[in-house]
Image (cartoon, rainbow, N blue to C red; front, side, top):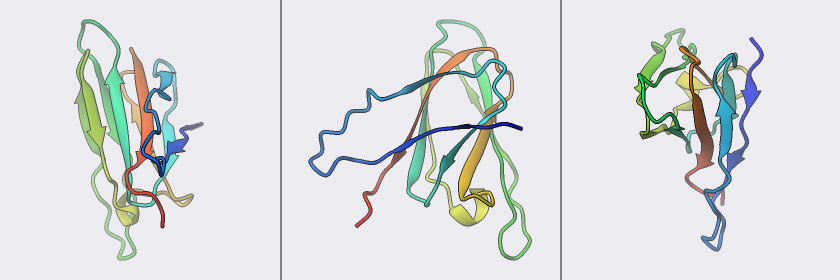
Length: 122
């Protein structure tokens, strides 16, 4: 699967970082998305469709150091609604690259996505 990488935006030290830097992503036909995760990153999703059933997003889970695997997290994204997912515990949600991977399973809509680190590194 070829995943599309999302840039993780960090809060501006002066507090004037704009969230207008959203990625308008066509989920139709997309294999999936990924973003770097340090446990302090959230994903903001907005379904831009004005009507209809919306879409389904599934986050891939991974094995922890003890060999346990979290179940994939699947959520419905309803038309004209916005959602925040995360933060994601790295030991359960990061792949071998240190990234969270997710896909829209119905792939029938256009959705706005932004990954934001909620705590600036010291």
